[in-house]
Length: 219
Image 1: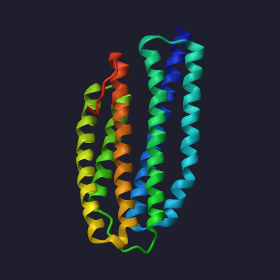
Image 2: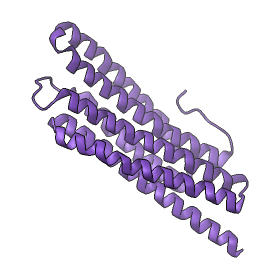
Image 3: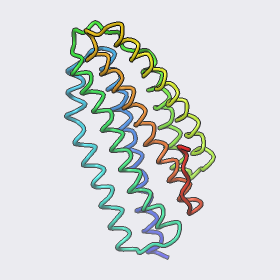
Image 4: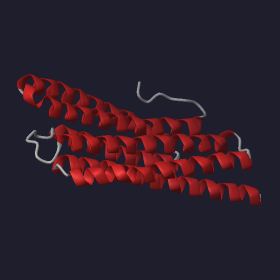
């Protein structure tokens, strides 16, 4: 029983570290959107420099989860929790990578460009940040009802991304001299859309913990 209690204490610590990683990833994302709209190249560079900290934390979470599996040899739901911890940390690290990609687009655009940043990108980012809050709560509570909401929100982001892409193509036709800057905004839309896809992956993994089956929330 003592070993069992120790295992669950370590599992709780692992879940806490994943929640902290989620905070770090969404903070990088939020900062990247701010830098984009404020043409803040220095902030964008800082986001890129800080990404290595998130990479390191993901690696340490994965090593801790693998060590727990090796030491405790859990089965059933406990084993699935540790597998999902590894998957979730990977998704969160990839989300931070997309924040870095947005920062790189900000650098490509530069400080003095006169292309208006599409307002729909900020709307997409707002929905994505709300998704992270829901996914974090669903992960903590192992709540499939909350996880299911992520699919609807992901569809909303996909729809907005389609609108942005269409409008960006129209802008390139009317402003061929600004095609490189306009394409950077299209890339940002794609990065936000992929950010949201990784959150949806976390929702799918919650279904796996609870039901022992894989569900595709992106269908």
